[in-house]
Length: 384
Image 1 (cartoon, rainbow, N blue to C red):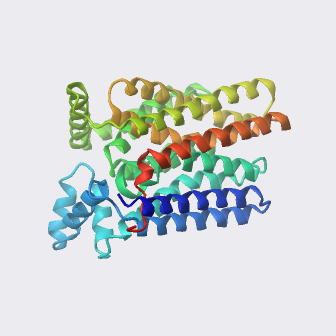
Image 2: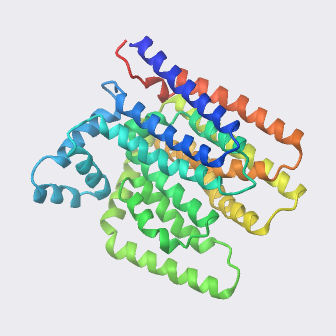
Image 3: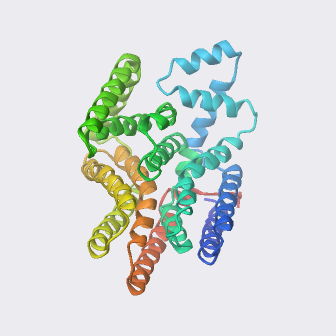
């Protein structure tokens, strides 16, 4: 249905992506690249504004949810927001709903989510070792996964995950203390249960992080204990809702009634395989070349953080599709800085060219599959 409209929409999506990557690759002015990324975010927001969802899309349900939160006087709205375990979603829907334009929900959501995702790319521009080509390849790999539909239709899950990914990047690459980004983590956790899962994982990982000295170990234990106490005292309602949601997913999977879509499963596997490919290359080049210790430690911290997630996601593949798919989205975002860090370790032009060509070929295949059979094939701007 609406084959022409969808085909034209996908052509626009692909052409804009290729054009942006081409401009970035051939630009030596990093301020210009930053402006191109900002412009791309705006264009993606415009795509979200003109998106026409099919009747079974998540967006239809969320528009009704938005009206529920935004209708009525403030006392009624406040009670509606506070009674849910994802109060951030209620507040967000309330604010957007007050604008009285349904098209603004996917548009604003696209701008917010892509802004957090592309924050990683824009921050990498500050490093003099980052070539424009590295940014373009990381962008192409991320956009080829086809998460546009999740961003403008599913909305809440990937918005929460993009915020968490930006926080992790700030901690590991920008040396921000967890306490300084804690409010942003809490904001992500308030949007969706996956934000809560990732936030809890970050607290657990805090205990496992490599410490430089005993004082740092004690400090981390105190911070972890404090965070766990706060979560336990003030977050029992959220923990109960989280466990109930997990139990419902597990029950649905066990009875064979859970949601599954083979092509999205394949695309998620492909994105994980791309990460594994880059991890192998990262360790290979790390052994071959000496590099700056501070940068090296940042990359290793991120690798230590991602590897358990990768292991968990592989297990989830055989158990429950929803969790597997959503965790793969999060890992897909975090693959961008790892790709760029891997390219920085390559000192041989021939090796760099091979890595670039392999990445482009693989991502073209992934983009083609996303457009033909993935959720992205539902992207539609025209009723044709």
